[in-house]
Picture 1 (spheres, rainbow, N blue to C red):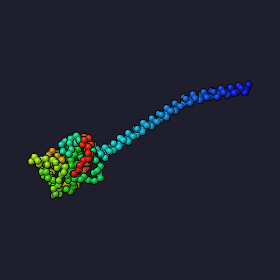
Picture 2: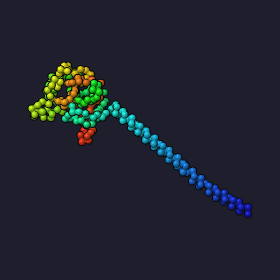
Picture 3: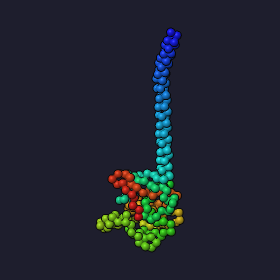
Picture 4: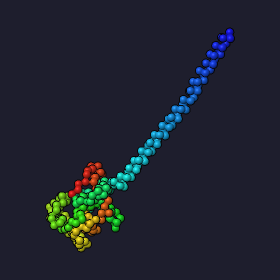
Length: 229
């Protein structure tokens, strides 16, 4: 009989133990799952914040040190560039080498408090003469393919593309030096009839050059690489 009682007591102990354990496990399990889920969420948020921070830094580096957007404003580069077109300017190329003739550059004009976009006509040491629609570099007549259509249209109307005037040719009354000094370039707008450029503002200092215009990215229909020379 004692043995029977002990057996019943053992069964009660087992039943009590079996009854408590699931309850405890049922209570503890959601807490552990919630904790793990919270840690996962925090980790994901941290990874997103880190990724966004890295992306922002890259944008700043690209924007201020490698490339920059530029909006064309004014008719001085027509018919090759028009007001409102958006360009990507390569800011590092002239840290590697010097500008070349025919390249389209963007540069600061401190007196104007703004940036200009023009085309390089002469580099250091070049002797330049520009008269009418004729460009001479170091005594040789040079064709300007980027103006070919404009010059042809003007000739068809019995005109010259470059307007007559005291400041339209080069050298002129404003600038009598015909040799491009070291550390500078000579730059004209493609729209020679309506461009404020080196014929009026003089040689462009290397330190004022922002970079080379490389890509037209807007409007989308005109998306293309800029043709230089």
